[in-house]
Length: 128
Image (tube, rainbow, N blue to C red; front, side):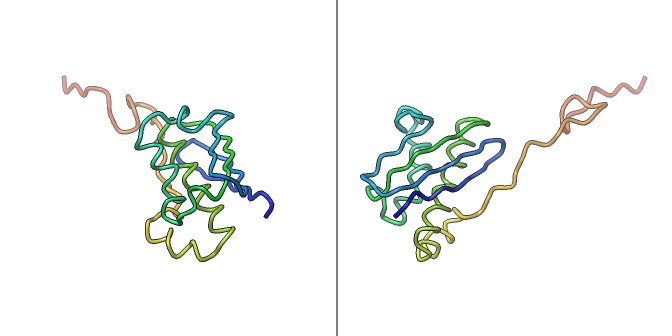
């Protein structure tokens, strides 16, 4: 099996995932993934598609991620890994789709409007 390359996005984070057969090593931006994502919840998000398809020790994953914050990056990586697993084996789709892992979260930050403090917050109104 050659390397599978997929892209995942969330908010302003973009993750490029290179999935190849191996022993289950995950490298994010040339760092070990437990050093990159220190909290258990973020580590779970990254490993979630692998756990559901029972492939935790089947593939080596090399990730290049930029933009956004830690949560956005973790969710972008999760989407990219999910897409790569489906590309390798179509049967994985039946497991991952009901969990909502194949859906790209479309929510983005709303832009700031002129004449207002933020996107929706307004300046204080004075009647007199």
